[in-house]
Amino acid sequence: IIIMLPLLPARALYIFLLAAQQHGASTSTRRCFLDSCIISSCASFLTLHPKLATAADELDVPSSMTTSNDPLYLARPIGASSSSNDSSDDNTMKARPSAPVEFLVPATRVGLYIYQLLSTAEELAQLKKDDSTQSSSPSSSSSFIEKLDNLLLSSPPTFIKPTDPTVTRGDPYNNMPPLLGEIAVQQQKQKERKEQSITNIGVAPQLFEVGELMGERRQWSRLVQAERAREEASEIRRAMNIYTTNLNFNKNKYVYSGSQEEKKKMIREDRLPSATEVIRSDLDARDLYRNEVQTKLEDARAEYLYQKGVGFEDVGELVGLLRETKVALDSWFGFIPDEDIKLALEAVKREEQQN
Image 1: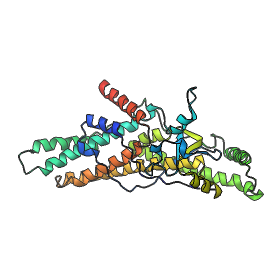
Image 2: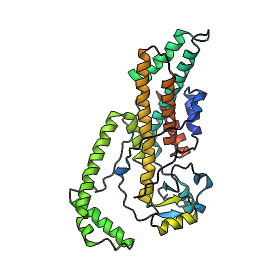
Image 3: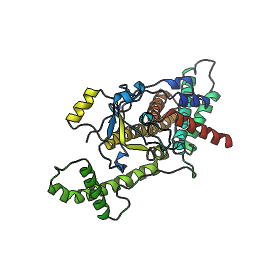
Image 4: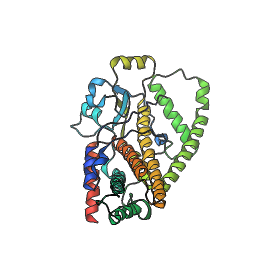
């Protein structure tokens, strides 16, 4: 299987930054840093069995989406086809995968929380730096410490409300009983192979295919249970998964940003990825940044507890960890259409006004 590893997206989330400034984030939070990440993916929960994808040529894609900094190199998924009459193939190929805005609201709450944390930590670091001058006082420093206490320890905000949508994971076996589900999947695969004129499979592999599918189903069930446990332990992870697991992808087409020569070579070498592989790669990248947000935030909480014990001698490490958290967060939001981010921010703002 060809998994096309992502590069770090460089698209600026100007809408998100402006909203964070309105919530008190300092201008230094605009700086960007690159960091290594760990892959742990929910892509295993995909329930896709499409035919080989139809890759769009480079000419069908805007130049802004064909740079080396695009989240996926050479291949990138697109959103599901619109049912509206005025939709065109050109617009469809430009559309990013997305979900309804209500699925993005919990993750947006997480984003504003992280920006608020970073802003407060930077203010505290600046006050500690100026401690020896007249511009700082113990009372002003203690107010930021109290705020960080509330945000990190005593009363962190709730990111998921009872009225919010939930994580959605389809069952690739259509919730059918054991063996029956595997037989149904085998029949679907045989149908797809026939449509693609793939006839050189051999008799033996087809005889053992159901047994292999039974093993894959057991592994899939274990992965689902493990991810649910991780979501219960981390509301941040669950909030971001609510959006990722509800994304709408085009299961048959994707954007191919390489040259015609590269495309022809990949076809000759039978290496042109399927839509499933491209979608998995996209989900891997999103989950990579989600994991980084969660891990760095946990590290920041541990560092804050340490600094609290030593009288906040050096807040620089805490600020650095929160900046790295912000970078991973921006990268995760970099996959999402700007208009959706704007609408989700407006929804969170309305919530705050009502409260």
